[in-house]
Amino acid sequence: MLCEATAAGRTFARVRVVTMPLTDYSRFGVWCSQFTGGAGEDIRYLPRDQAGDLPKHDYWLFDSRKLVRMHFDERMAFLGGEVVEDPAEIVQHNYWRDVARHHAVRREDFAKE
Image (tube, rainbow, N blue to C red; front, side, top):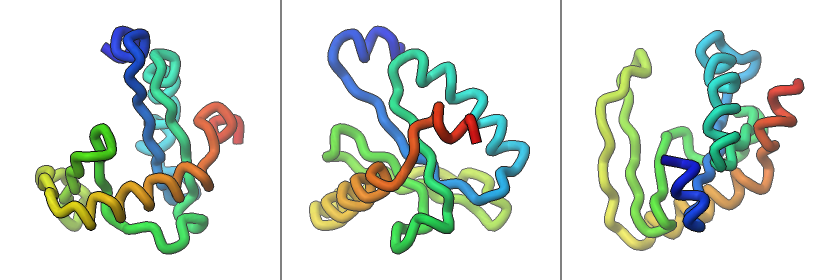
C-alpha cells in the first residue's frame, strides 16, 4: 500500500518520541521501521529528553486537516482514538508536528546509534 501511494505522490511521515534507553519493544519498532521506510514512509526519531514542550500524548494527523488523538491506559494498552475537529487544536498539533520533525533524526541515523 505504501509503495503504491507514494508512487502516486502521497506522503507518509511520522516522528516517534522515544524514551532512552530504548525498551525491547522500541528497539523492535526501530528494526521494523526499515520496511515501511523502504516503502516510502519518512520515519524520524526524537529522544523524549529532547522533546521540550511537545505534548505527552500520541496523535495522528491526516493530510494536516484531520486529527486523531490516541488514548492509552496506565499500562499503555491502546483504548482507542478520538477524532478532534476543533480547528485551533488541529493547527496546534500541526505546529507540534513541525517542531518534532525539525528536531528529530532520520530513522537510518537513529538506528546507527
